[in-house]
Image (cartoon, rainbow, N blue to C red; front, side, top):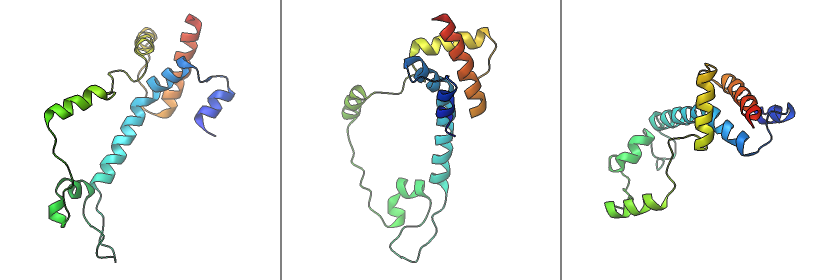
Length: 140
């Protein structure tokens, strides 16, 4: 059964602002670590030679970084630092908080007050979510 379905069935998740922020607070770091692991494995694995001789072979990161070594063209377009700065102003950058700032600060305070550790796995993250949700709902 899906984690969120079971939380919803046990009345631990309603999908409101607080619940979504708590999910982000409790699970985002674990998700990012998993994504980083997958990206590292993909970028460093070796693509073997195929029967189709036009298919590239090698490590994806190297093939992207130095395409001329693989007989490919580099299609990157150079741009000025001014253009990059303009794009950064227009883009939504990653915040220092995994969720809403107020919820993040409240969660950190509650974790400190109750001597709760950051989760190392999904089970611990689920327990932390339920505990923090109960504490925050009691405060409301």
